[in-house]
Length: 562
Ligand SMILES: [Zn+2]
Ligand SMILES: [Zn+2]
Ligand SMILES: [Zn+2]
Image (cartoon, rainbow, N blue to C red; front, side, top):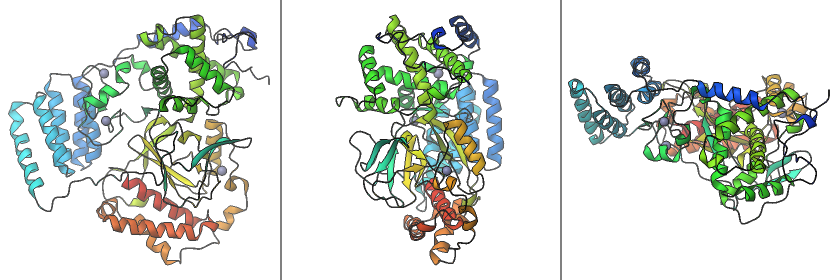
């Protein structure tokens, strides 16, 4: 099969500075099946789709769903529906006040009287019906009594605040200074450590360059700027948009650009991610020609100049992530060109782009930059929360739920292995990496691209996903050694007392685990780590995998409000 020629960052002629028009590629052996007229037609159809307006009927429906969950004592789930109601309710109507009041009762039963009082105040300020006011006043009294009680401990528990176990990297915020990006033929760019690492150490607490809410998640449980959970969220006054901690988060978010946009543009994750990246890039580089010069340097695989700002450095890092442009089929390329065209049309609606990118050379540059960012977006990392409702559940049965997708300038360089040596999870919008196997100086850092539990059970499924999503054939120890699986049943490490002690949390309910003192949690963590260190030479076998999962669940629960 004849592969299409690479069109990304190609010049019209060898000695020209002008990039080719990716919508006119007849000279590139590609069928010119994406015409400007087709793209304009697609764009017109998208823009003609209805906007999502505030709607009290939807607000009431969502509130009824919330009440049903509330009746089952599922306060977190109930709050998500009440948050939905807050964002759907028409301004100036009592629906908004009712939604805040319902949410206040969730906070009350979650033992969060301060948040409860804030919501009661919000309800009173937003048309809460006077005839029901007695209920709210009674709740204020109860909150005050609760707070005055000497045995009162606010819930849900404190979130464990992640902290790097090392000094910070000089070029990358939130990255341990012992981590370095290296390049070789086998792995391309990858991350190694310059000192020995121990299990439990935190090597990454990185903020995302751009984060978008997951499409699956209706975005009703977290602030859409900082991604904190369980706050006194407010909603935009104009649109059915999702929620923010306060005006400050709303102001700093990308919402100004997205408010009241056509429904067809809403919640398309990759499109949103590209838009946010390109707005960030545009803000970081006021001069298009300077940006173009920098891109040329990066395309030649040279080191970027040293006088860049941290945010500009992040752009360089993202730009140099590996891409598979040459491996695309003609069909895949066609889809990418259409998507690039639509994105370009949308961007041209904004003055910051239409006025800045005026010349043909600049517009061609923008075409290629968008196309390039579609490849960068393949490196986006899914953000998960510990998504279990009801305190009675056992720790071992926890479930993860995706709430967002983000692009991380450093974390995205960590390669996959089915036998990873770091575990990654999220606190708010931050990407946290903790060491789960001893790593020697000079060794590569590996995480698993597939979140959640690890076992030997689904290697085929995993391989297919890696291949489809990342065009990647895993050649880790597990994928290349066929004899390993039978051996796992012969090694029995569970007679070691460390095993029993370290595993105790997985038999507890979440409620019980949350009530442990800090030193109790640390003692379980210590035994689990000791066990994993002692038997690392056997890993991966069932007993070490079980202990790794147990440790990861502990970290997840500590890092989550749910
Ligand atoms: Zn926020
Ligand atoms: Zn809005
Ligand atoms: Zn593998």
